[in-house]
Figure 1: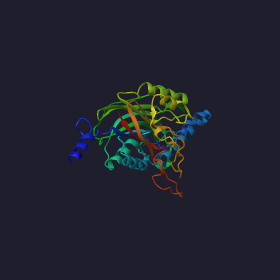
Figure 2 (figure 1 turned 90 degrees about the vertical axis):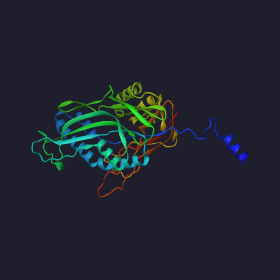
Figure 3 (figure 1 turned 135 degrees about the vertical axis):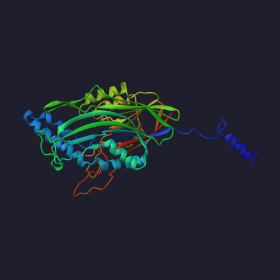
Figure 4 (figure 1 turned 30 degrees about the vertical axis):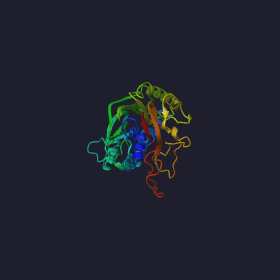
Length: 364
């Protein structure tokens, strides 16, 4: 017995305690919720002859809004909330946290076009699952509208003057899990980039999607870290996107302690679209590098979310790290249908047109 006790004593770590220091592991998620429709119909209007543009714009708005209604964010939010409940990430960066504001404008109108606040809907779905997430930061991006809405199914039948209008507002959001012990956050900041792509609209000022960023500082078990969440311009406007990436690196991406960047950067990781990924990874390390044999495609479901098999074909959604932080693992979520397709009457079966990226990181 004495020999055994002496052996245990020799094996114990110096300092008198046999307890190991707890690992400083936290799980981060980046997820583009999908605003519910492609905006391409409106982007194509300026190329038409001027006389055709007003009617084409009304038709484009009707198509965009109709698709957003069809893709049914309240149902998709339940699927996203199920994913979050399974993963229980400590910090979440969300993009395209959209607000559709549709309303009747004619006195006495019985039109009832639905409005959707994606943040409100998702937070309610999380709360219904007993999850306690705090909205730590929000950036207000696009604010497009009000635009005339032709939607006979909801009683919107006149456009000159319009008896209904719709406005699209876009946000990026950081959520923090309030149930994570010892995780504290502060100093929320947000802003928009100087570089923006604007689109001319018939009979009115040009519209911009107003790309921006949101950041927080945080502390976990004695280690400070900084989280930045952003959504850069689409790859069709590479000069604007790359300018935004440089602005991101020059300001919001850097803070006290380790830096963690979440977002839809709209720049393919294989370098096939724009130079933003190379610019970002010249400073940051890509958490997905722990999966060298997995392409990690995160974007590409069709705009109605009805495709029966996945069409994800680009990796543009990223978790990036810099400084005293290591990647433990990384994986995709939302890359499987959340329900079966019904061939006779197709319905949305994907939580978003993007998959989410989840990564466990270790603060040093």
